[in-house]
Each structure stands twice: as structure tokens, then as C-alpha cells.
Image (cartoon, rainbow, N blue to C red; front, side, top):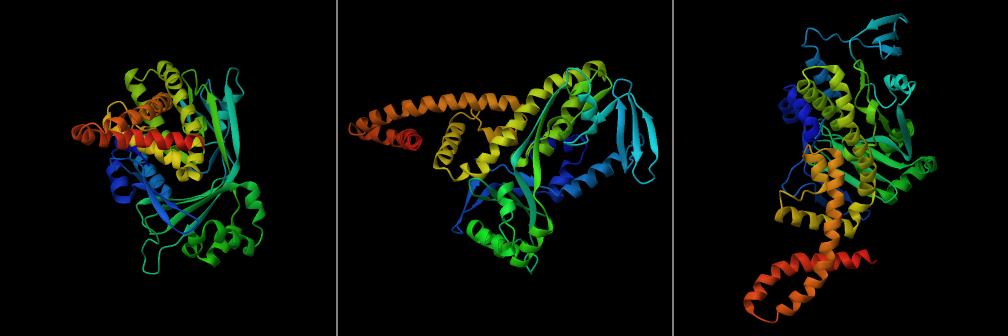
Length: 416
């Protein structure tokens, strides 16, 4: 959970309770290499962090808060069968009693996930655009238990990552001192791990330290008790029909999990919707079209960013060029804090609109390319000046170190 999700919790008075009481701060990525060495990469030069929060606990707190309102009625085990999105009528099936329930409402809001029934109804109408993409990778959840003395088996204030190019594994800390481990790989690799011996050999080769952390027997038992699940990206538009129907969250913009923004984006949906309700005095004929217009470019942007960050996590975190670019961003952010904000910081630690985060990143790339070229020339000039006077020498050392050094390394890596 990061600032966008926290903004949603704050509007309900739940931010402090959930974050302070149940959030585990993660200040950096902890990279696990094949040789069992580790290194950390801070998310932010100012020490800002993201939080690991148990999904079940979060759901329970949100439901409990909703039930405090006398006009909120919660019905479990009801499946939407059909809906007239213009008239606001719905037919639900009670999955326990098998009875049908006919309901009418002024506004229907579908927050029913990546395989949304509300969205399926919208797809029957003209001028509704929709696309989905399954990536060729699946995921499987495993678990690192707490130690025998009930402590974390790894340093807890990190998102632990085992990047391996085409695949990776991550681990998030839980309140009970265990770790939720997620293995991401192409399906064909999952399919090759057919016996305990093959599985253990694969882990010893790619995740050697994780074998003891998970436990050999537990790893084998949990792996073969589960199956790899698919991941899907969804884009669609518009999100509304007239003034009677709206979709939000994964129903409108399902994304792969690699930026940690799925839940955060869904909660920010609610904040944006609330802001528009206030702006237009609850006039749904204005609010719903405004919501689609404002939110769609941002939602599609974060869907794309989430896909990009998979490459970052599984591969680029070990790239010298990527790490060098991070140094560039930190340096320029220190020199120009009001105008230069790294992409990850913009997405995770601000509420800058997602599509503007991409636009800013594209502008930054152009600037860095120019600085690299100028830095190469400047480095030569400063090298000559170093021989002139002691005063110039002292002044030039810092500039030469940051600009010429980074530029030279960047040029060298870029040509490899």
C-alpha cells in the first residue's frame, strides 16, 4: 500500500488504524543473487516506504466500516445474472437458496473484478471499447514460515526479490512473521517442474537460499498442491452508461501486479469519484462522464506501467545501466527537487496522475540523453581545467565526479 491507497483510507478515517497497527514498512528492495549475496536498492532517496498490509485484514476493516452506515446493507452469496444498465434494474442469484432477486437502483456501481459481470453487460452495447491481454507468465503463492522462535526469517522492512531474467520470485512480510512468497514464471517452466527432484534442483540452481527458508518438504508439498494461475491486463472505455451505471477498480482496469498499484489505483478511483461528486454537487449526469474522461487515461497508463515494471523487477534491477540511471535520477532530484522526480517516486509516493508520470518520464529521458552527451564533452574540458589552479581543482572535483563520471559510465554501458 502506498500514498494513493492511503488517501482512500484517510477519507474514511482508517489510515492510521490500518497503516500504523498492521502495516509493515518496506523501505527498499532486497535483491537475492544466485551466489546467496544480497543487496538493497532504496525506493526513494528520502527514505519513503511502501507498506505490506494483509489483504484479509484490510477487507475486514473496510466491511466493518461500511456496516457502520445505517443505509448500507451487505448481502453475501449473491451473483449478478443480468442487468439493465440504463434502467438500473438487476437480477441476482442467491447461490445458497438458488432464488432470484430482482433489484432496482438509481446508480449501479460494478467493482466486481477482472472478470466483471457488469463490464460484460456494458460490452453488449455499441461504442464500448474493450481489450484484454494474458501475459505468458503465471504465478504461484508459497510461504516462508516464521522461525522456531517466532521471528522473521529475513530482514522484514524490505520487499525481497530474486530476479532471474525471464522469471523471478518475491516475498512480502506478514504480521505473523511469515512471508507470502510469489513465484512468477512462464507457464512452460512451471510445466517442466514435474517431480520433487526436478523442483528442488530448479530451486537450488535459481533460488538456493530460499530452499532452507521455505523448507524442502514444505516447498515440495505446497508447490504440487497448487497450480500456476494466469495474469491478465484489461483496458476498456467508457466506464459509465448515462447517469445510471459505472465500473471501477479491476472491472475497469485490471493490471498485472508488478507495480503494486492494483489496490492503490482502485482506492484512488473512489477518491477521484468522491472529488467529482463534490465538484458537481452529486449531479450524476455530469459526474459519470467526467469520471470516465478523467480516469481512463490514468488507468490505461498504470496498466502499461505495471507491465513495464515486471521487466524492471525480474531483470533490470541487476542491470548496471539501470542502477546508474537511478543515480542520475537521485542526483538531479537533489539538485532540482521541484522539477525532477523519478518515475517510481511519482507513481508510488505522489498522486500525480498516472499518464502525467509517463509524460514526465519521457521528458526526463530526453534531458538525460542530452546531459550524457554534454557531460562527455564537459568531462574533457574539466579534465583540462584541473591542471590550471588549485581553486578550480577543488570546485571541479565534485562536478567532475557527479557529471563526467556518470556520463562516461552511461556512455560505456550504452555501447555494450
